[in-house]
Length: 197
Length: 201
Image (tube, rainbow over all chains, first blue to last red; front, side, top):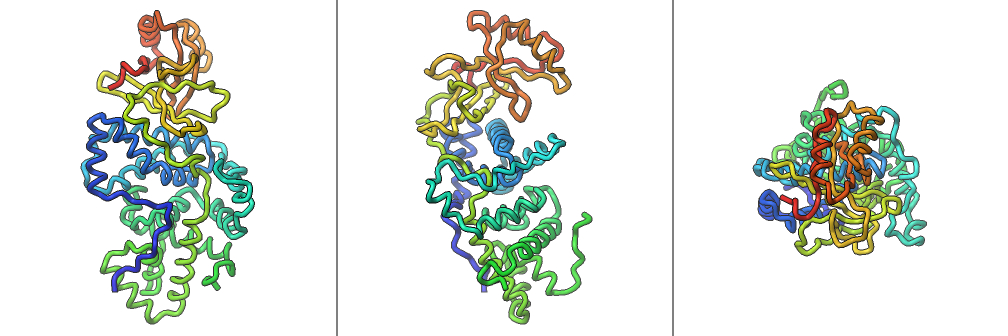
């Protein structure tokens, strides 16, 4: 029996690898339209990843800017040895951790957890379930490294090897981080998930 | 690696693999190991079901950093130019310095709350008040020295610093080359380059 594929959420759209290689090749040649295309492909995932990691909207936006700048400037350095998504997320992760280290003071944005998206209608904003809020609260209590592993595993569906490459750490560290993160989430959501009893 | 766990048995190993079994990315060897244990472990079966539910909940839960607009639309191949915006009325521009070998820089500005949501670049057909140069000071530059450098060269701060510490400034167009040369001559200035569509790579 092979690995069980669970239907991906509609928000996760992975480009095909061939397309990725072609796209980044065009970007490395200075093709701005290709860069815009790549930006569109990754913006949603990157914005969520960075927002979740740094927990401060303005800082997350800055890190996103810097990440894309590096992608543009160093596109020629992508040799296809890893997936393009891994390469881009690794840049984003490094930039985020560097930005977090730069700020000595806590930069948690207390409003971020409850802030509705600009696109949400009032009905949607109020319709967010208590379970989502519980999960957001529990995630916020994790360290950036643990949040990063959860996000890459359960939103981006990356393998532990890809995550280790992104975080530049051993695969056992990734597994251990996810183990502790799950344990924390289980404790905080105990009895809330239908199958989690 | 203080947080690394010591694995004692198959149950612990299966627990470590479980999230990636759930997301379907385990390699065949890991799948075999996990499934061999799953058949014999009620706890892991229950945990698998719970984590499948957790993953679905997690993926459907908005998190901080969700873009305020859907992915921006391409600008139709238009050459990068500068977006003009009153700084005070925007959250923050997304700025890309598109540096060529000659260190020519362009700043790409994404307007997160723009109606079109499209990417805009400094120097477009917008109203006044755009930056026309990018300046990077050395990290240890005191604020008063930074201010003095800008005043001395007639530069006015338009945006920044970005996370990489660059500032977008506006200098009088007719003497931009001289102003930039003056800025470059200052010991605390690492980079001072024009930004406009023509200067792109």
